[in-house]
Image (cartoon, rainbow, N blue to C red; front, side):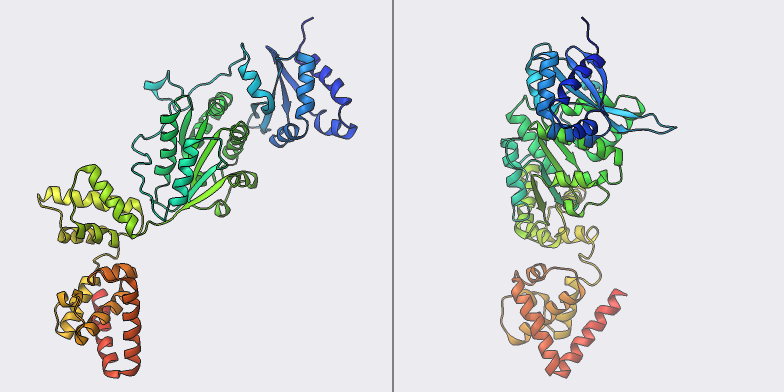
Amino acid sequence: MVKDSVTVWEDCLDFIKGQVGEQSFRTWFEPIRPVSLDGGVLTIQVPSQFFYEYLEEHYVHVLRQVIHNTLGPNGRLEYSVIVDSGSNSNQPYVVTLPNLKHNNQWDKKQGARKPEVTNPFEIPSLQEDIRYSNLNPNYDFDNYIEGDCNRLARSAGLAVAEKPGITSFNPLMVYGGVGLGKTHLVQAIGNRISSDNKSNFVLYVSSEKFTTQFTDAIKNNSIQSFTNFYLQVDTLIIDDVQFFSGKEKTQEMFFHIFNHLHQNGKQIVMSSDRAPRDLKGLQDRLLSRFKWGLTADLQMPDFETRMAIIMRKMQADGIYIPDDVVEYLAYSVDTNVRELEGVLISLIAHATLNKTDINLELAKQTLKNIVHDIESEVGIDYIQKSVGEYFQISVEDLKAKTRKKEIVIARQVAMYLCKEYTQHSLKSIGYHFGGRDHSTVIHAVQSVSDMMDVDSKFAHGIEELKKKMRMKSV
């Protein structure tokens, strides 16, 4: 006797009635509709993603037993989940998802049905390679400099790369501001996994690309193929998940894919420009899943890390930069790695075009045209020159190690004005005065403030210098 999906599901319902309460049967099983029976695979339609999750969480053992009794040991169950019920102008669409609890067993059976899969990246030269990773091979751990600013994230990334899907860092969420190395780190994880385990299907994709692919799949009526492609991934890396904000259908699809991969022990790595708790416009259930594993932040690199980045970059490019230039750049560009690399590129370009060696003067001129508040009209050089003229001493004396009282006072005044009129950090100000530390700058600022309170003539002189600073900045 040839069975169809309706007959098989009716047999299943007869068994289920004896296993669950009457109210539970009415709530969770009567709304289900049989869709198809193909090669031992019964597909049933459920009204929502929540419905699907509830069945998998609470009735998976009943379903497993009834499918085994009805279709035999090779029987398999799939869900057709209604994602959007549609409207008068839009057709509803559904996504077919496997019964997660015994899907792996079925895949190992010979003759298991393979779903339709096409590569949504549509790269003509790679049509036969559906496992194209989309990774940039230049991003690896060897050229990702470790510092206090990124130590936790880098260590977690290495752990994930060595044992994808096995550690408790799943998902791994890396977040931080612009230009701090998020994309570099997540792609380094993917490259290490691909290198160590060729059979692991690693896929890197930006959230914008994912959204575009999903939108195209809706237009082309190929949602199931899109879903099947992502369900076969072993390590999924999603960059800039904050751009999922407000895209409800895209979030719904990513939620399905996330659940399937995570429950099957696949690794998920994500990046964002802010912590999950600060992400807006994302579904609460999606945000809660982002917090399941480890969340690690990337901060602005400190001085030592910036120096290491500069030296590694120059070493890789085979270019020599004097130590004083390295220190100057590291002190002056304290925003992010991307801006630091941009300054290095500009510096090299200036030296090449002008056919000159890289030196401190060239570095100052380069930064003056690039970095805001560096060598601006009221900058450290201008303040040093103005204070030197006022106290009738040279700029070299301000930077020297001498402890003569008149020079010490002039130096403290210059530091005070630098703190007042520039955006330089205390470390940066100290560096420009002969490499002194930040505590010396703090002491100088306090000393000048104290002297202004008790010495009206001294206070008047400081006011004259301040007036000169204000006039210069107009």
